[in-house]
Length: 310
Ligand SMILES: [Zn+2]
Image (cartoon, rainbow, N blue to C red; front, side, top):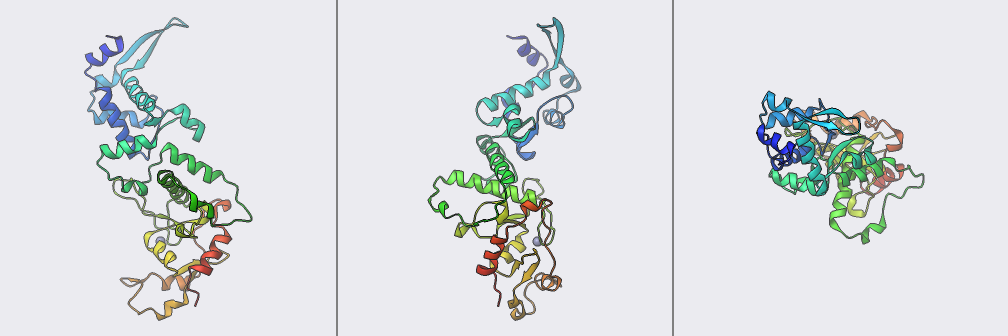
């Protein structure tokens, strides 16, 4: 038995398998990524608490001779166990290791791969149907977000991608859609562009705000940030239904059809959901960077094809 195994047994530490399970669950709670383990990281204490580790178990060190300099090296047994568990998950393509993740986001983090994401959902009994709306970022989704966030804003933009008719592979398509969703809601700081609502589920896994396609997905609208808008459920519905649109200055326009609505429609108690917008004629809450503003070609298409202008 190795010195490390002896120490694990002597101090009655959790098994590596159990630590792997705890790590996958923790990654889901933390949006799919956690910082590399070094002393003081929040996750190290969080998982130690989960296993009810005693002060002694948290404090015990491994001692080894550092061959090159012939000096004594001390490393935390608990850190080592966490690293071994994460490394084993990475070797099975359930996580990306900090070196690989750093090449993508310039930060040393452990990040869920799609396979690890699925495993974590199973462990927490979360339905895979829910996966598409979760705010968890996997390595594969993060790659899409990076591509969308770094793309150069085109002048001659066609918001419709006719080539997509021929795209097969449903799984890749869903990953691309999740990338679009997260890139858009992150660009709008997780708020509805119209009312500013920012809200999260109690388990912190799911934002209320949705990524709306301006030119809808059903007519092959592109999955680009310029063809997206972060909207709460209600305003998303109003936008898709043609009640509201945007003008060239990103001001909210309300369909004149609002005047034929029965008086008790479009209200939340006394609050006039749509008529208030009609009277305000104000600009939406735009992203901080202008290169991510909705493209005028997308908005024009929406005005001409979805919005009820008369
Ligand atoms: Zn809203």
